[in-house]
Each structure stands twice: as C-alpha cells, then as structure tokens.
Amino acid sequence: MDSTRPVHIGRQALYDNRGHVAGYELLFRDGPEAHHATVRDSAATSRVIVEAFTAFGIEELVGDKLCFVNLTREFLVGELPLPFPPGRVGLEIMAGVEVDDEVLAGVAALAEQGHRLTVDDFTGAGSRARLLPYAHHVKIDMIAEELRGDRKAIAAIVAQCRRHRRIRLVAQRVETLELFDLARRLHFQLFQGHALSRPDLVTTRALTPTRLARLRLLTELAAGDVQLDRVVAAIERDPALAVRVLRGVNAASHGLKQPVSSIFQAVVLLGVPQVRQWATLMMVADLADGDESVLTDAVVRARMCQTLAERRGVDGPTAFTVGLISAVGDLLGGSAHALADQLPLTDEVAEAVVRERGELGAVLAAVRSYQCRIAGGADLGDDLLAALRWANASLAEPEPAPSRP
Figure 1: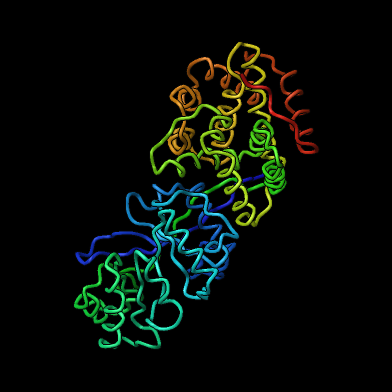
Figure 2: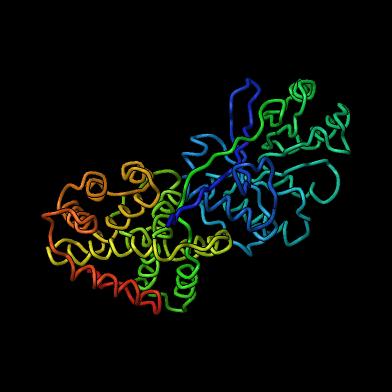
C-alpha cells in the first residue's frame, strides 16, 4: 500500500520594475486541478507552512527570493505558533482579519521579534491603517471596488503609505497592461497579477502523517518536566515526523545547514519549544490519516539497524536514523541521494544512507539485504522479531528511547 501522498502548493510570482522575479506568495491548494484556494482558514495556512518547510524545503520552493505566507488571526494573536525564525518568510496579514487591539498587539510583538510584515489588500480606509507603522510591504489592490483602477484614488493611498519610509509598495491584482503602466508611474516597487503571470502549482510527494504519533509527542511535550528521551522516542516512531524534524533544523538555522547524526541531536539543536511548535502546527495541518502498517515497516528497518549496530559496537541512535532515512527514501519513491541532500546530515550518515559506506553503511546494507531476502546475507531473524515486538509495543504504549551517553 502507498503511504505517501501528493502535496501541492500554489506559488505566485512578484516582479520588480525590471520584470525580474523578486519573490513568491505561497498559496494553499488542495489538489492538482485547484486553480484557487478552496479555503482560507488556519488549517490551510498551517498546511502551507508545514509543507513548504518540511515537504518541499523552502529553498527548493523560492530559492533566495522573498517569500510571503498568508496568516489568519489565530497566528497573529499567538493562538497558533510560527515554528520558523524571523527573516526567512514574510508574514502577510490577510484582508479578512479585523484589526482590533489584540491583533495590533500581536502584530507589534511579531515586528519586535524581527518578522517582516505585509498588509494585504490595503485600501486606505478602516482599521487596517493601524498596521502601517509595523509593515515592510503593503499590497494595494488595483481593481478593488473602492479604487477600480482610478489613478487619483490609488495615488492618495500611495501617499498615505509613503509617510512610513520603510514600506515597499506592491501593486496587487495587476490584471491589465494599463494597470501595470499605472503602477510603474506611481513608483510601486513590486507587481503581482495575471497580466504578469498566474499562480503555478508545485507538487511533490510526502509521507502520510500519523496523528497518533503527533498526539503522543504533544503529550510528552506538554509535561511539566519534559523528558528528552521520551520526546525523541515519540519522534522516532513516526518516519514522517522524523524527517520533518530533521528538515526543521534547517528552517531554524536561517538557511545555514547544521549537520546532525541523529534525531536526538536534531531535537537538542531545535530545542523543546520549537519542536512543540512544529508538532502543534502539524496536528492542525495534517488532515489525512496515515497507513500505519507501511510506516511501521520503516520503523522496523530503523530499529533493526540500531540493534545490529549496537551489537557491532556502532552508535545505535545514529544507526536508527540511517535506517529510518533509508526507508523513508524508499517510501517516497525517490533516490536516497535526493532525500539526503534535503536533510542536514553529517558526512558519515550521508555516506551510509546514499552509498552504504562505513560501519553505518555496512549495518544498513546487512539489514536491507535481509529484508530483500538476498542470498548470502546475515541471518537477522531474531533482530526482525525484536524490532516487530518493539514497533507493535510502541503503538500501544510510549516508552523511553534507549539510554544515550
């Protein structure tokens, strides 16, 4: 059975006044034929954030360009977390968000933290003008009902925004070349709309999530005295979550890859608060149930690698990670090399996963040979049974991870 699912994100380009792509707005899409967002709620925003960072990788989606993600009220007031650091993603305050005192306080706090804020669909009237002191970008809808492409009306809003010197203006819904010319004459810095390009759909495949593992992890993270080994154990039982945590290390490091050799090390680098934020957001974002049986097979390979490695005097947690990444690569149907390139792995772990080199690579090769019933391989029947018992017990009752030095 296939334990992967297609993941889609819409991506609409923003252009500078020379016609070069300067950034992208990331948009929710629920299927390959979806040309517009069917929903614009917190679940949709959560999906975009989680999948952009952990299914695609933000660098693969936008490169070194600007990136904008729409936020609902729940994110602005702190009811839902933002699990990435300031600077990498611009936060776009959606047009439907009512700007009351609570939202304004949340926006001020985000700006204080260093986040770049964008005011969407600004028409110059109402409470949204209160957002201007905190904004880095302001989008003006060129065909809004209040404006209808009227030069004087748009120029008045431009003048209002220019009182705040750091604001860059985005001409939004540029649907005709005439509107593009008008926006250029008014000295907008960025341009977005169908006259320039329509949103394109970007698709990849990701592991189907397991909500049970998410709930267990959140339970561990909610404890007054968080036990790191139990947190790591909860992550290790869920291959999809494990890969997301590894990719989260990159998301938390401002694009500077920090190589890690195990999930334990990744959790330490991220820190419990950020792991909690990712897990919370994943619970909101993951709308489909996973195929537990297929994902369990991946955990079994990882556990077999761990027990065999420890018998050979090789680090067990690192071998678990090697086995897990190898199995995830098989499930996703891509090359191990492509997956390893997206994760912040040490050279030793990457060589083991991609080329089965070194002591860790020899462990992985032995386990894979046994699982594929290759003649002449080691007899790992006892390890398989032990791994199956461990995996089945994990589904019923969380247990601490093996002790670490």
